Length: 206
Image 1: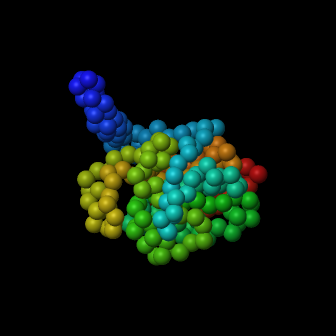
Image 2 (image 1 turned 120 degrees about the vertical axis):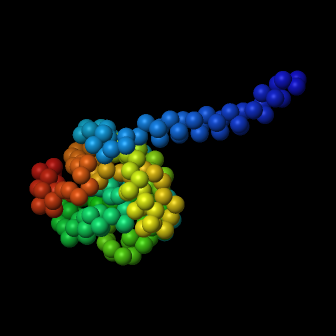
Image 3 (image 1 turned 90 degrees about the horizontal axis):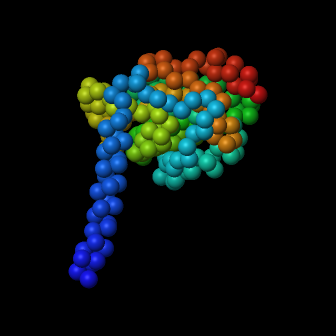
């Protein structure tokens, strides 16, 4: 009986240890350079994920995508000037994208405080969401571990706790089932898809 009680009591510990071990293994496998990511490809589906809006509400991606085809793009954070310029650039053609029948969703790995600040500093009408643990970003295959210089800059310019994970800036066009119809991914974070090219792609997919 003593042995049985010991085994039963060890279960929570073993489960916690196993979960921690799996997380460590996944994190250890993250590429250390943006060029080494392995993103999902055209024809594959984005996984189901739970994201958070600037009000702290949980948004399930599966329900979000059923509304209409979506332009989903990932940015590194409000601390990145290239990202904030891209947020603004998408805002410039927002109405044209909406008129084509798409919705726009921006996703970052930043926490709630930083997300709220970005929404206030760079007001846009489209949806901006946070993948606070970068779980969804990792599942999509666009996550990598930043170098010490970038991590230091993130720490200096973030209000939330910073995870040592970044998304490679990426843009996906998906249908109402989350299937990828188009993607633009550039390991060079200073290069983003041009508005004119994006609009041509969206028109071509109609």
